[in-house]
Length: 98
Image 1 (cartoon, rainbow, N blue to C red):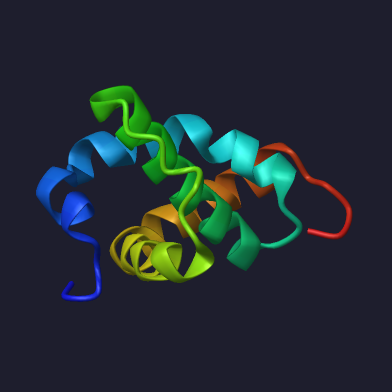
Image 2 (image 1 turned 45 degrees about the vertical axis):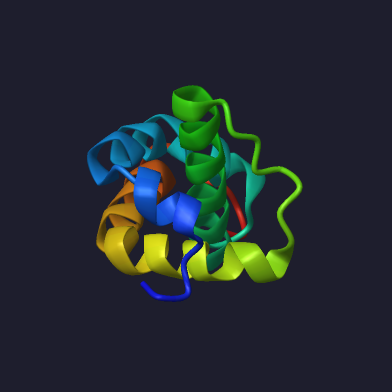
């Protein structure tokens, strides 16, 4: 957790972030091509949405280097849940190539 930005550590709320991910999973599913891209997209959009809705902090101007530790952390914590979302969406919305 030492690589994570201070603003993230101070304001991170796993329960609320999980709720945001659940609502955004379907959008990430249709915007991506495979499970790994789905996880990255879901992690990024959930964090962006959470911080904007809760604190009115816009993270859109962060560089990829700043995003990477946050995405890695979110996927590490929520990876099994993201897998479950992906499997459920793949079952409900089978798309060729996924």
